[in-house]
Image (tube, rainbow, N blue to C red; front, side):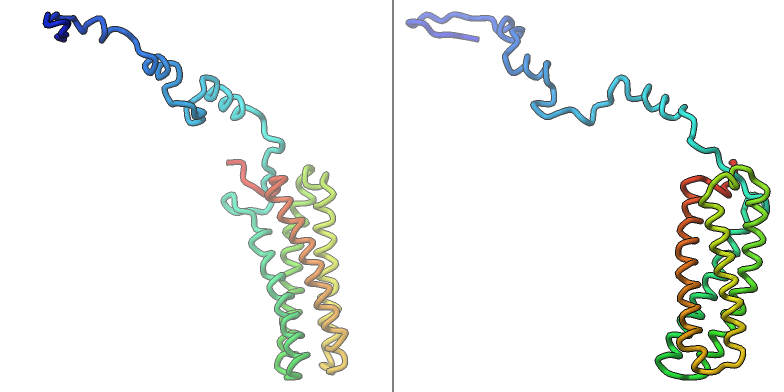
Amino acid sequence: MDEHDGGVTRTVSTAALDAETTFEDRQRQEEPYGDTERLWEPRPDGDRRGQELAQLPLEDEPVPSVVQIAGHPLHPVVVPLPIGMFVGALVADLVYTRTHDRFWARAAHSMAAAGVGTGLLAGALGATDLVGRDRIRSRGSAWIHGLGNLAAVGLGAGSVLLRRDKRPEVIVPRGLAVSSAIVGILGVTGWLGGELVFRHRIGLSES
């Protein structure tokens, strides 16, 4: 670099200036990302902590179902059938209450009967799992789930008998009340069944 001093030209080397570290360079070296927190940078202990978490034992090992086909439990496959039938019977009762069309009374009677039949099948499969697995029997929610479903099926059988003579005064309000009670019980037992599967890993495959 050339400098002019009183008419005299001097040549100054810029090598020293280039080699000198400026304040901005030092700041960039100390904090290359500025003042922001470097949350996205991998931490040295991140991988180690992930491995430690992966090696922690699970709270509960999965409890496979007793009645299963190729690792798929049969109880949750059949359970939607009685639930759908009993809910359908309640809907038919509500429609009959509104329209007084005998078709809906017959539909409620048929669906209640189908709910009892499929409920007995689902109950038999669930009871097999309850009797065959100690860890299922040890949970109180499993017993409440099973006994509640048994009560729902029993009410369903009573509903079928109640509707045999098909009298309007029997369907409303007694038949409607029974259908409402059944659906209410199934709502509670269905919630408990979900807890058993998704929280306590009941009926899951080991693989």
